[in-house]
Each structure stands twice: as C-alpha cells, then as structure tokens.
Length: 183
Image (cartoon, rainbow, N blue to C red; front, side, top):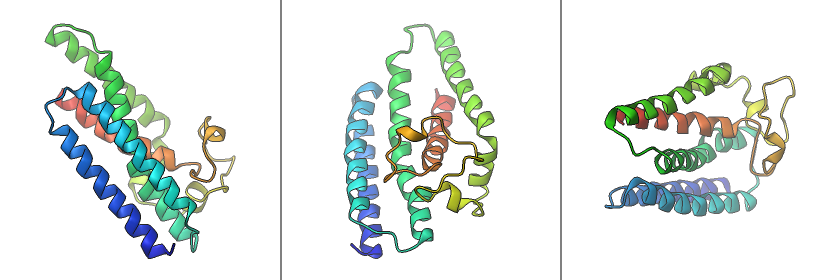
C-alpha cells in the first residue's frame, strides 16, 4: 500500500466512524446504551486502522510522526471519551440535581490532576511544537530522560509510540471537560 492510499483509507475510516457516532448519538437510547454502541464501533475502527498500519511501511519519519501525532490519537480519543462517559453515567448516583452537580464537578476536578501532571507535554502539543517529535512519535525511539507512561511496556510497540496515547488523552479530556460543563 502506498502513502496516498494509506492516508485515504484512514481518512475514510475516520469519516465513517464520525458518521456512525453521530447517528448513534441521534438515537433515542440513553447515554449508557449509546456509549456502549459507540465503543463497539470505535473498537472495530481501531482494529481496521491497526490492520492498515500492518500493510504499510512509512516512507520517512515525518510520515510516521503525522500518523502517531494526528491520525491514531483521534480514534483512540473517541474510545477514551466514551469509556469515561460510560463509567461516569453508569455509576452516577440517583440523587437530587444539586448532588448530581457536585458529582460532575468532582469528576471534572479529576481532569485538573491530569492537566497538572502533564503540563509540559500539553504545552508542547498545543503549541504545535515539533522539536521533540522524533522522540515522542516514532516507534521504538523513546527516551528514558523524558517523562514516560508507566504503562509503556503494555503497549503494542508496532502500533504505539511513547506519547501518542498522551495526545489521545488530551483530546478525550478536552471533550470530557465540555461534557462536564454542560451537565
């Protein structure tokens, strides 16, 4: 598979996933059922993305960096977001509106911990910096002097870099922050 075909397939996969997510979210089902359905669809899409990657050899570092900094994280972010929405909504208390407001505010405060812990990388990412991209977004190239995830060795090294999951987490947490604000 050539680079143009690889990007086309991934773009179409993303378009199909976002269309499916929109359709599910327009249904009458409650958020727990919708989240479960979206997680199943997202899992299928991620498996297809992984299959596309197995069939493709990156032409250079910039090609690989783009995939792990931009393409893959958007898929994983959807999965993280709906996993957290499912967990939050399935375990929320049956309570008065004031207690529920407090529940969502407490959940939102958990995001602050992540933002504080990952402040440097979040700044790097949001400023669209590139000077550490070869260390962050190229497979098999992690640097132990950087702050690394403790789960790094649990990741599939063919489908992960040291920081692509962190980008997914940033994107998902931004969505979660908005979710909490409207609750």
